Structures are given as structure tokens and as C-alpha cells.
Length: 238
Image (cartoon, rainbow, N blue to C red; front, side, top):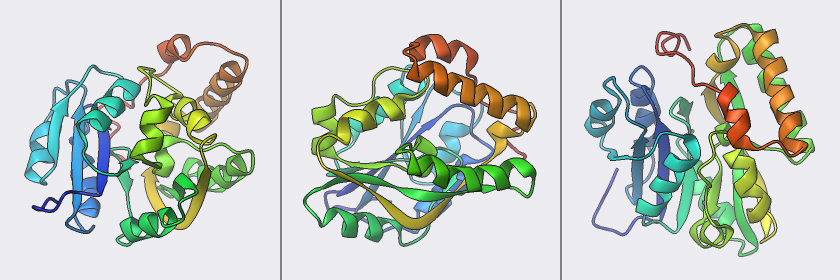
């Protein structure tokens, strides 16, 4: 995943107790070109996440637990001209790096994201795979859609804030004022586990409620008290 050539693409993956899935994600990343560097930013996992990440060639750094804090720590450590933020349970297509650079060959483009397919055969996966394109029509996209941003735009936007939730919407609100944010037709595959663990109806309703409260001005730090990662036992059922 690394070479003597300065990397032009830095992949940043926040992780917390992701031993069951991080290896599969990094296997997909390993198919990308050599001038890519990969950071797994650990939030003090108590499983084998870090060992597995290192075994797959990723650079592992620690950061204060919290998605915003971990993502920003990875961005600060990265040296690439383009920052690509992935979830620890996301599988990327082999040609994704080439597609990113093709999109950024237009100087007016500052970043973008991908189509998302949620893994699994249940109702949650099917509905969320259908629902995400509807959200895109409203101008919404989230971190599980594999967001990429030019380093310059990320820095000008002030980077990810130390928020436990909606750090993606907060950053993109600033980035989108600087140029075009494009959507690529290639598909990343993300686990639907969050919407399955406690039942789809309950989880989806809670997610919509938190989104509405965020739009109404409730602090993400307050909303983060009601947001928790999937339990370690559920991470294996993807």
C-alpha cells in the first residue's frame, strides 16, 4: 500500500473494535495503485483491530475516541493531495482511485462521493440502498458513501471538528461552498449492521429524529449521547 513515490491519495479509516471487518476493508483497498497511503485511526480498541490493520499494511495511529477526532487526526498525519475517508466496514471497487482522479481533473471539483449498496439480504439493507439516492436528491450525503476531498479544500474548511455525529455534514457544508461536489456512479458496499442490531424500525426512526434535531440546531455533541457504535458481538453479522 505504499511506495517511495509521494502518495497522491491518502485513505483514512477511523476504527473502534473493528477486528471482525477491518481486514476485509483493507483487502479491498490493497487493490488500489501503489501511490496510496492508508491510515487506520484507532480510538483505543480493546480487540485486535490494530494488529490486523498493521498486518494488512496500514499505518496505525491513535486518537481521541470519536469519529470527528479520529478522522481529523488521520487527515493531519496524511501527506496526499487528496483525502479519502472510509468507514471500517466499507468495500471499495478496484477502479475507485482512478475514478477519483478523473473527477478531480476538473479544477472546479473539490470533492465527491460514491453510490452506496448496503450489504445483507434483509429489509434494512434493501431499504437503505434505495433510500440513499433519495437523500442525495436533497443534497445530503454521509460518510458511509466514501467521501473524498482535495487536501486544500479540507484545510480551508477547517477539517473535521471533534464531533461524535454529523461531522460529515458539518465539513461538507463548508467544502461545497468552494467548488463542485460530484457524485460518482461506482458503488461502495457498506454494512447495514447499524440498522439491524436493535431492529430496523426503531433504529431508522431514531436516525431520522436525530437528523431533524440537527437541522433544528441541536448540537451534535448533545445528539452524540444517544449514538453508539454497533456492539462488538454484532460486528460479525454483516
